[in-house]
Length: 301
Image 1 (spheres, helix red, strand yellow):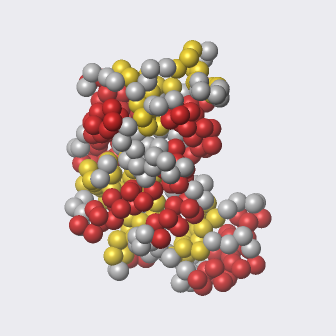
Image 2: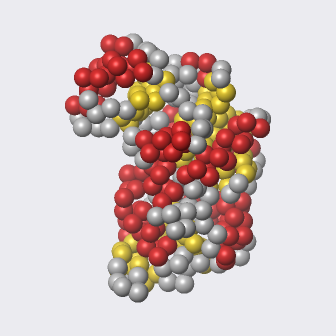
């Protein structure tokens, strides 16, 4: 196959491993800086150009679109799709996962366990919102935040109100979420490919830090997951229409709770913690599905 990898930094571990895995299996893969791809929207002849060169004859595209360029990245990916190129993750599904509010709404509709979450555009309702999620402490999240950036713990009603009002004053959209104390700064990242969990690790935040992201200094190690956690991760991926994703969960007293679904999960921590060839499994998925055009969201808009 001829594969396009949409990624701004070809030197990241995840991108290097994906390229290595593709070439080891005899495929031709090219890294394209997403922001350097130009779109030509022409009736019956959609085209893409990369540094004045027309992009053609690709069989599959692997989107690794950073959160900061979601709008443009999805536009480029949609153009690949209308050209008949098979996406590892479809633009519609990535869009669902990137909009945290929409993502939670879709998961909630399917009955998937979530922390109690509230959203409002009125800072005067800050105290009511805090009460809605069970009172302080609460977790306050930017809708566009990634890797633990823009996630704040409001330890008291007063401090939580101040943070909520400050974010609203800056015209920033936020969610207010129940704080799961029993998780003790630990979460689980489950990597879903197709309809199965292929790797899982627990991430433990450093002392004094309630976030467990590896980018925030958290430590990852292999973990044994329960059948309920496995089923929930697959259902979350299927609900959003993602073929490949990282599903982050907290272990709460009432059972697992999904806190985020990442459509471009980093694979370094997972591969090192579990020894699983995640990059190779991604390429295997493309080999099985790209020739047949097996997509999850075809025709759903």
